Length: 78
Length: 355
Image (cartoon, rainbow over the protein chains, first blue to last red):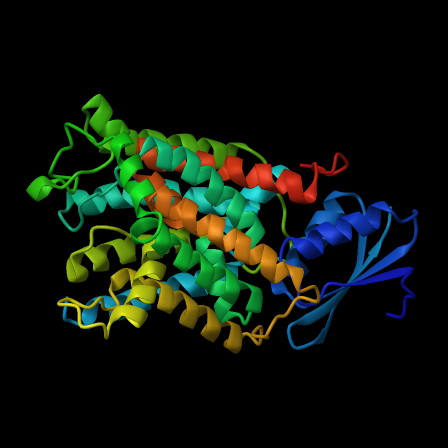
C-alpha cells in the first residue's frame, strides 16, 4: 500500500504510554482526512495504538512490520 | 537457607510469570492508568480476574493445609503515604515493579536504570538510611486479632494484617466467595474494551496469572518456608544485598532467596520470551531525559513500595486476594497515586474517546 503520510512521528525507543500519548497529541492537531504515520518498536504500542485511535473514531489504514520488533502504523484522521 | 532449591524454584516461578507478562503485555501501570486516561479496562479486568480466582484458590490451598494465608500487617502511614508515592512513581518509571523488571529482559535500557534504583531505594527504606522513619511509622501498625490458625500464618507468634474474615470473625471462605462474586459481576456485567490485536484475551491473562500465583504460593510455602506468593520488592532488595554483602565477613551473609529468585526469573523469562518471539531489542529513548525521569520514578516507587510493605504485585495480585484491609487499601492508594501523576504528565482524558 503506497500512501503518502501527511505527518510522521518516530516513536522508536519510547515505551508505553509515550507513543500512545504522542500519537493522540499529533492526531488532535491534524485535519480531517490527513494521514499520520507512527513509527514504533515497542510491541505493546502496536496493539494499543490502533485500538485506542479506533475508539477515538479515526481509521487505521495499516499496521506493517518494517523490521525486527519495528512497525509503522498509518492512521487516517476522522 | 543453604539449599539451592528455594532460589531455583523462585527462578522457575518468576520465569513462568514473566512469560505471561511478556506475551500478555501485562502492565499494571497501564492497567491502572488506562482506566483513567483512555477509559480502557482490558488489562485491569485481567488483573482483577486473577485476584478473584486467587481469592478462591488461596483459600482452597489453605483449607487443604498446603499454605497459610499471610496478609501483611498494614501500617496506616505506610499504606496511605507509601501507596500514593508508589502509584506516582510507577507512572514516572514507566512501569510498576513487575513491569520495570520484565522490560529489563526485553532490552529496555530505561527499565534497567529504573529497576536498579527501585531496588536501592526500597533497600534504603527498609533497612538503610530511612530505616528510622520506617521504624517510627511501625507505631501505626494494625495487626489482626481472631485470626484462625487453620487458614492464617499466625503460628509461633506470627502476626498478620486484618482481613474481612478476621474483622467479622467468620470463616475466610465467606468473604473470599462474596469478593469473587462481586468482581465477577463487574467483570462480566460491564463492557470490556476491545483490543483486536491483543496476543491474549483479558480472561486468558487472568487465568494464567492465577495459575502462576497459586503455583508460586504453594512452592514457596512448601519448599522455601516462605508463606507468600508472587512479590517483587523484597526480591530486588534481597538480590542487591546478596550480590553486595556476601563477602563482608558477616556471620550470616545474605544469599539469594526465593523472592530474589522470582526477580531473576522474571528477567530471564522475559528475555527468553522476547528472544523466541523476536521482540528482544536494546531499546534506547531518543531523549535522555527519560532516564532521569525513570530514576526519579524508581526512587519514588522503591520508597513507596518499601514504606507500604509491598508493591502492586505483593499488595494487589497476591494481597488483595486475601480480602484484607491493608492490601485492598494499598491497591486503592496505588491507583489514586497513578491517576494523579497521569493527570500531571499526560493531561485530562480525551473527551472524544468511547468507553
